[in-house]
Image 1 (cartoon, rainbow, N blue to C red):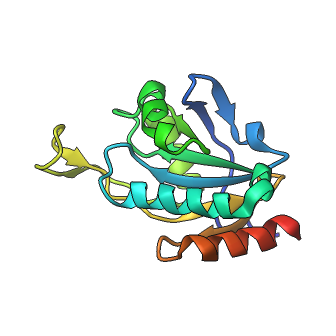
Image 2 (cartoon, one colour):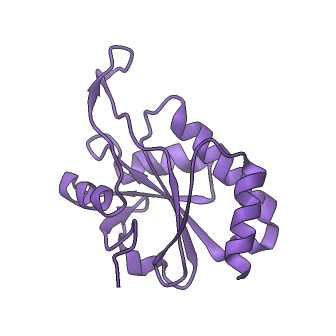
Image 3 (cartoon, rainbow, N blue to C red):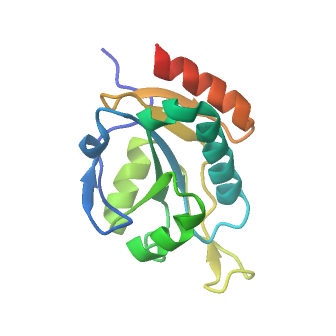
Length: 164
């Protein structure tokens, strides 16, 4: 039996400061997106797209936990994530130590690296992978979505995956 393409165990902290693992979300599908709160374009677009797709699902969206995993734990504390995600109430933010975030990135094969950005007040940005990952109720990889899709396409695929 081969290993799943992405996914695995993680130990992080949610945006309320509570410790969580991948097992915390079993029993419902988990929709994960890796990003950071200082992202100016990709992350807000992805969060709007995924929120819109979940809105289109109606009551079926209750079967999904939407998770926003930071790739910038130096700036993204639980409080910062909670404030940032107030605009995206379907999402729970996850952070942790640098080591915990690196382990989660490896498990999901996420690329993210600190890069100089003179337009950022802290002088850096975090270019990163822009995929969303869906895990099934048992925590196993079910699908991924690129940022090139529209909300209705994601909603249609989610509906199929959630009802099969």
